[in-house]
Length: 55
Image (tube, rainbow, N blue to C red; front, side, top):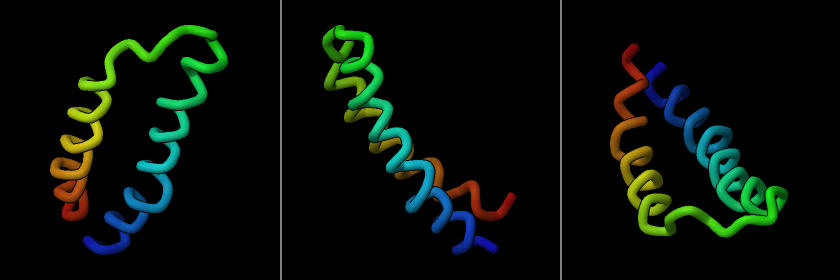
């Protein structure tokens, strides 16, 4: 089920988080807190979430 979990991460989790990074600040009418932090979060999600497959 390793590949199934990673497919869920790629097709559901990552786009949802990307949308939230865009829509939450827009809805709150506030600027993004930190673009650098969002880039770090994205890449850490990519490299850490792939290991969720074997749970």
